[in-house]
Length: 486
Image (cartoon, helix red, strand yellow):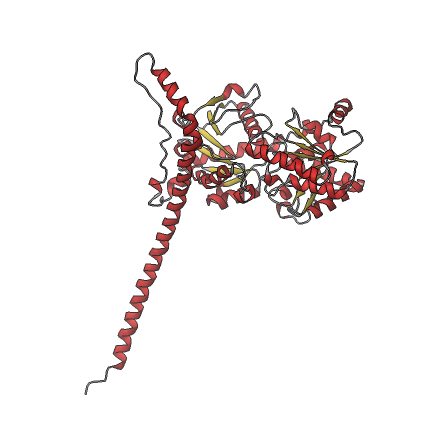
């Protein structure tokens, strides 16, 4: 089956976001091969590249009808349009980008979002193949959804190694130093989301323990991206002030390009407790900047620590024990004070990052798509081969394909517009969230009830067998105690 048309289903996209960049990379690769591509998104997008914008269409569940040769669901979070994935007729790929565990999210805004995202990973069952960026995220998807591990492929993210290796001019770097008052400073750099599981607080605490006035921590990331980041940002600034390092910690907000910051830095740090890949780590290796990362999630794998079953593999960065600020301080001290170690890590990083090059990415993507297309010719996705729990049919109570309509002549469209816009603040903010929460509960309950029914059936069979054995034993005993007839 030839791949001619491809649909992407995404929540939204914007420049600077890792999942969005992954979508851009896939689109550009496949357009070069003559594939006609459309990208359908649920929520408003941020700024997009000029070559991507014409392919993008804002739709809701009712407006979209899957009819492409291949549909790829990009899944960093759940979104209503993703439910259409259940009706895909052609080949289907569930591209999983990892979901932050609710236990790491805390009570901050957005907790319900990650809880729903974790539950709805069961959408993967409607795919011929699932794809993850690392073995860690592949295992996580299997754990959340029970999707067959043998159908999950690992395709690392695309890193533009050549472009990142190009060092900006010293004038540009000096301009950044002046902008952030970093002249004469050694720079510790964090790049990424401002989120609790990223553990930026560990970097601030480590900086305070180091007690080196010539150090500066640059935190590059959007501080107003969502409610969680807007709350966490001032909390982190307050922590820096409390520990006496407020003048050494700078939050830059979003920046036009990350590459100059990678070359400006002495060390790139990623202390995350949950990381499905860790793009900043790979980009730092490409830029020739040494890395220190948490020994958690996919980060040891990305750095090549004991990779591919080879315990003798030299890691391309230093790892510290997850959440342990003392160990983080020790690793930073080692790297700041040992130029030979720094040089060795830079060399190892440049070697390791080749595994994530554009060429490797292209080869892996084409192989996965070819496999999914062949599987689609042979059979339907796994969800269609399983007996659904008896209550599953009743689990989804949301009427997502309902559209506001008016039959009034001339003013009908105006009436529809008024009805939609006068109820949006109630529907989206309250009703939709309540109903989707109920759907999550119903799906989990249907699965649990089915498991209990299976267990009950097994227990009944055991009881029946025990009764049969007891009856047989009584019969044998009765025969043995009968007195012989004269």
